[in-house]
Length: 228
Image (tube, rainbow, N blue to C red; front, top):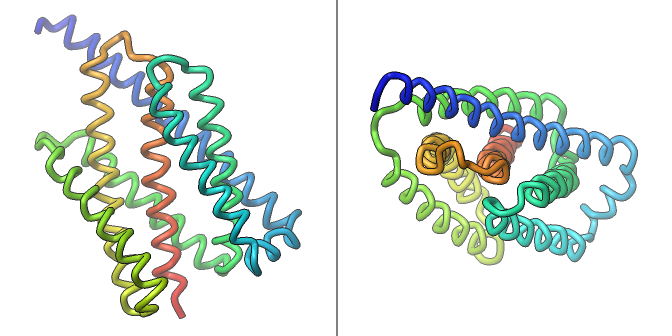
């Protein structure tokens, strides 16, 4: 590879990362604004959800899962629809997130947010600049995630142990921290494979991947810091 090609590749990669993080920032902003509106202008509805709106919550989760699948299928083919789907997803997440935030104090939320931001920045830098291939670690993190989700179901319906809940939350923090590094490195690999032909929809999908990592990390840090 000659110097000019290497410079062009590096410049293109930097622009792609900027685009991904721009979309990520947009998603976080939309979720934050939605949560703020829900908690300040729809308090009665939030309280109703918390007191027995499980059916509506399951419906929201179902729509969100469907959107993730849809975005994955359209990342390379329709950037416009992918962006709209991503924005809808982050707004829906803001609604569901408001239900979680309603259960915690402002101090706990601020602590969890600042810790999440610091961990996200640190793990992102590791993922971008580390020379070691993180593929094996990423696969291991996804396997652990499946195990943790099974443990959550078992604990909710059978064990109902606060100690197990804390252990799962700690494990989830480790898992999503690792996934942040892995997904950042994967973004680099995906760009280098696609090059200048990389679709804008792919940048949106990469932003969604990081968005899921950071939101889940934030939620489990909330659970840890908010314990009595």
